[in-house]
Image (cartoon, rainbow, N blue to C red; front, side, top):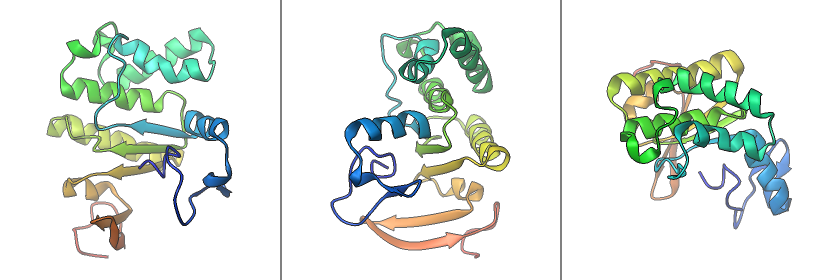
Length: 187
């Protein structure tokens, strides 16, 4: 995830994004890519504990110097999508784990990035909410062409994938191209 998210530079091989080798970019260019092109959904949420739900969602927009009124409209829309409109003034400590995860998801979408990197995005959600969020992410891929990369141990999530890369002990074990909802093991 760190390599795909331009947080780390590869020690060997290449990671290219928009035909650019990320190891040839300086830190400000990498920060620009992360800020504009990649939405991160962290397993540990990475919410700022002193900021409200709304302020956590607004944060990436402030880094991009988005107009404040437009930013608030985007945050309200995203909090509505993840079902947290009524929690916009709450601090992370006042939210359940599932609610914090939904704030992290809303924040990842704030700048409308073409790539979403999700580390166990449903790990703290009940099944119904998890299915809703996965369906929403799937819709972003289908309707808007966003690239959604999910890292998970939950094989139930595979039904949403068109490509599955199995990794064991840091090595690629196999790669499957599939159609959605295809039973595991069929290619």
